Length: 310
Image (cartoon, rainbow, N blue to C red; front, side, top):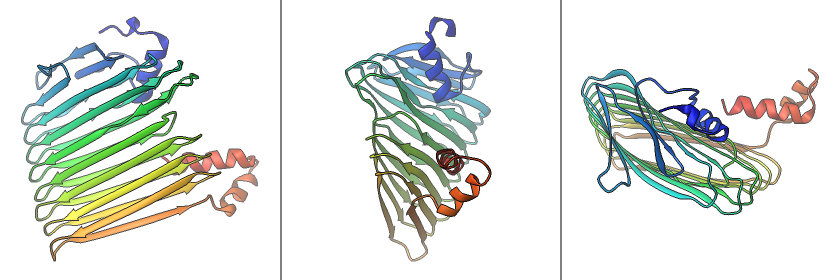
């Protein structure tokens, strides 16, 4: 694929959601305004279209290590509603990075929406690092809507690390993530979320720890500004001798609102589950300390928020 065929808006969005300035090495699939914009498979990673055209299947061979897959989606047309189903089949003893994400530039008067349903089937003793970034821009009155669904099915001894990021420009998002974790498998999630204006964001996780020695660590950091609203719903079901930890750490500003809903269910006497939650405003002494260094109050707030979301 030649990136020069993309306009400047599309290139900028691609950089925001996938850190791509040129054709990536390895396997990739780039979707632009509901159409395939470029694809490449590698010797160990095959990307094929579903027969009904609703998405793609990614097959990663046993033993694949130190390889990556990029599957970003970019949208620059107002009024487009795009739905895709992407299934990842990761073999045994793999170590791979998967970079997804969606960026919407809406300069029109109609809503633009992308619904991405990603399903991961992770083989025994494999390690997957998954990065998903969401980004919105544009001065139109139409909304930028993203509703991702993520399903993770982990076999024995596997590890999945997920980085979920949304820090700018998305008017409405409803994120749903479910995971089933087998024996001695480990799931780690780091979510970073910021809303502003009158944006709405709901993020729900349901994790079943089904095997002895399984574990999950889900940490969400968020900032709600202006009149935005967030709902964070984190649930872990301990169904075996397992360990689970969830944490909601949020900053509320202006007239923002946040609802944190922790849920832990222990269905085995050997399950150990912990939840931590904190919602509050920026501490006054933090602002004062930075302002004594010459920053204005607004600049001090931005420094604190940026550091918090790193």
